[in-house]
Length: 163
Length: 358
Image (tube, rainbow over all chains, first blue to last red; front, top):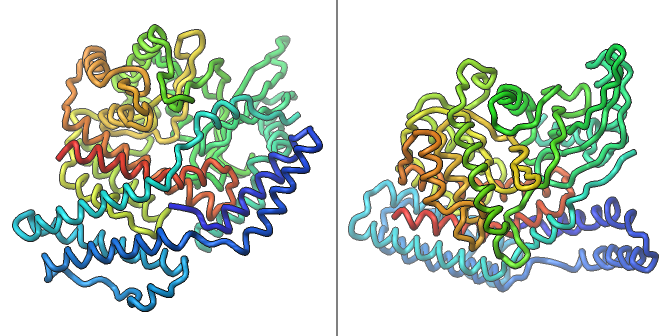
């Protein structure tokens, strides 16, 4: 789960203000850190999550749901979502909401198929759902960078003093 | 008032995790009351370890009769903005007190409070134990220990766990902590606990997490015995000094339940990366063999695997919690937001470990 862009930028600025800048002793470095805040303040109102990966995520989920429903047409229908036309012109926030709605529908299909016994078309539907889940996780993973936890742990070992 | 608003009010009015001066002032008043003497408290040192409780180290000195007492102590505070807020200090305190003479290396616990009156949040005070906490993340993804240290620490690691699981808890204060004492309910109680948190922390439904919940219900093992379960027993949660494990830490998830839960948690890929050694310490076979030899309790491999899958699910849910906490509780530790971005990695690990069972 990603945090909202507003909160991420707000948290970065708050951390710089409260915990980083007061502890920078070099004047030039302190000025540059304040410059980061200045940039973030100006970048923030111009940002939104990249639209292309969200549009792709929505398309992949819709495609998987269509294929599963073709195999198990008696599965309960999901809530109505965006029309094709609405998806084409949707904002990033609207696409993210649609992706989340479709994930809920897929979760419901997983629960429904598992309550039916894995035979014939139901087994094929389960296999399709499994394949879809795997491919979506791989797709998300391509956007995920190796964490810097080792570096963070090494840097934060000493603590802070409060006299 | 909704819980979230109540917590926010508490955060703003009662406790600022970074306001060390305020913490020190209130701590001083509390200690004077507990000791019944004029206590001096040295500089508070905030440790930036952990993602949940806030940890400070300090020295307290006071007179007891003709003697001057000086103690190096640790203050652990459960902030209203923390992942598992609202916190209770009593389970950890009771456990540490009960285990004090058990041979399991734990810090000696002195005082605690479950309410916010004294310090603005629940807290406990325990002994400062020397040592460093090895972490699972290594710069190059390589081993966390040299071979000799790995073998020695691995032995101590599993020995302490075996002692914990063989601890006769029923006649101690630990008997009052939460958990399941019915062998048929140990898995279901954990499923309910973590599913509730998952839904609290994320309105987005992740298909792989929902899939895992179906799998957990279908495959829940019966516990062969009920023990104290640490709940977060792994590399990162023990101190070592000169090759000796000096303390097992972070008991905030302690509960009664199936000991296989701790063993499964140790086996998570997240604690070893590409290392063949669980928690960078023991191979899976070494862990099982040593544990069985020490406890006399046989390990059911399918139960061990179940709890490894469950642990991976639990860790993924914790990532949701970190992200939620950062988003809604003004908790500005950027590592929390960073955990949110690592969720796909956790979900892939969950899928992989669940697949192994299929």
